[in-house]
Length: 530
Image (cartoon, rainbow, N blue to C red):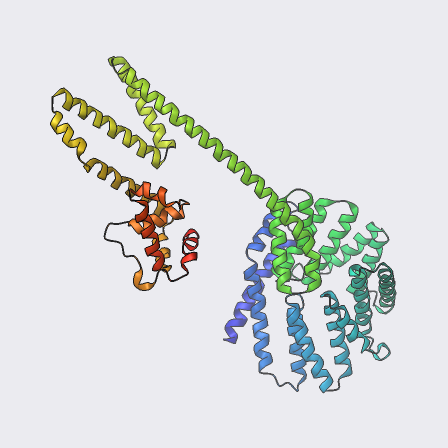
């Protein structure tokens, strides 16, 4: 099992490296399709990370908790979860802190507290982060951990400055953040990647943008396209192009950063929702909506309060604009449907007029041929643009015309008694009613194909309706089919089904008595059948 997991992991990682390498050479006008494709395949990238996590979890379960391997594996689990699920990352850091305290390993405990405080401050847990840092004595920290300690405080006060509502405190927090930033630069190695990052940030803050871009060039050349570091450097580069006013380059590097985040299954990111905001400002509402919805789902998966606050505002704005755009499209659609309906009505009127003209011109042979051509044309129009119900009306017209000719023939032949006998018979009426109900049943079941089954679920098992062979609906079902269509007046239902109003009342009451739910809610539930 472990071998299979490792083989799958290796293949998956190789595939991701191949795709991520393409990000470094992605043409500036090809980022949209590449990003859409990555979003569509994001579950595959998540699966790769989950395989790595599961492999580590199995190793951890088999490791003695008293060994340093246990501490190391917990740290590796933290690294996997750090940009994936905040809660889980904090959980494994807390396990390592307990281990370090039990083994009285002060350096391990300090390192874990710094990591946990940095993650907490990024997640909006400022009080908890401050409490962790206060437990660390900077005078006893090793030179290896001192930069991380200063950076953690710098980040904490910077976050507090951004999100506090107190103007006085904001200035104080920014001042403290800058002070720790100065201390950080004093202990960082000038050759370290973090030193270059801070230099770039300082140059950007002082509007030395060309200098900041040169530093970013150095950083970009030192990272691989398939790493979280690449996502961070390209994100910083996009911010520089924003200050330079180059929108196309800004979007391009945001897209590169977002591509890397998605392909590495990093859910703690800012690139995609920042890109969505840019697209929204440019009027590309549909793409902005897709990106911000995906980014919001990733943010929820990461489960950090501050990230949700960062994306909530732009999500709400884009969502409202998208809904307004959809409503306008729906309004246009309703207008077009109304226009089509009016044209269809005019078409029906035109067909009727043509039909009458044909009758007037049927005397002459030449006129009859012309009328036949017009009739064929009108039949073609009816087949093309008029649906089931116009065909039904046409059939009734033909039937009435045939009936007229038959009456005329019998009157001309003096067959009045036979004619009277036919007129008094209900056979024609019964046949027409049967056809009407069959058409109604067919049309209704086309709209609600599962009506009978769902209706029976509202009845007690022993009272459910069983249709006879060849029967689409019976009288009881037909009554409630009309109610489902919005015709709940018993007098109207009685008129359509040719029953008395009392009979309809009795049918409705009888069915409600068979219901497995409240009688008062029965017809409401029928109306909800889809």
